[in-house]
Length: 194
Image (cartoon, rainbow, N blue to C red; front, side):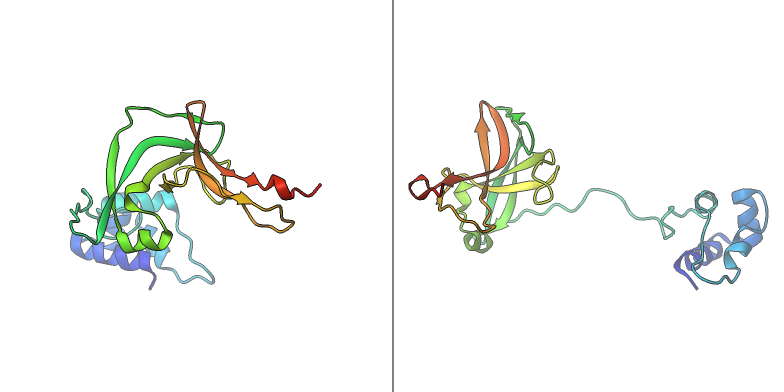
C-alpha cells in the first residue's frame, strides 16, 4: 500500500468514517477513495484538488500525514571555551551593483566551534557574518547565502600571472559606502606577461 492510502486509512479509523462517507463529505460522491484504491499499471496519480478536500475532512495536512506540531524552534545557550560567538550584522553584502550599509544594523550572535574556526584560519575576534543580496556571484554564492568573513584579511595577496584556471579570492568590500561581495585580484605587475 502506498503512503497516501496508509495515511487515509489511519485517519478514517480515527474519525470512524467509511471510504464512502469520507468521500461524500470531501467531494459530494462516494467513489473518491474507492478510485484511489483501484489497481493501476505504472505510477498512481492523485487529483490534488480532491486530496486537498479529503485532507480537510480527515484533519490531515496536504502532505498527507498526521498534523505537524508548529511552534518556536528550540533555543539553546552555548557556553564554554569550545565555542566562540560570531556577530551577524544585518548589512546586505551585494553580489550585484552594491548595497548601502546601514550603520545602525541590528546584530545577533551565532556560536561556532573554535577548533573549526582554527582549521579555517580565522581568529574568532576577526570573524563576522553578513547576508548576500543578488546573484552576480552565482553559482558559488547566491542570493540569501550567509557569509562568514575574516575581517583581518584586508589585502588580497599578490598573485603571479598564470595561464591556468586559478581563481582569485572572494572579498567583502566597501565601495563608496556600498557593501559588495566580489572576486578581487592583485596581479603581480613586476612579472606581467605582455
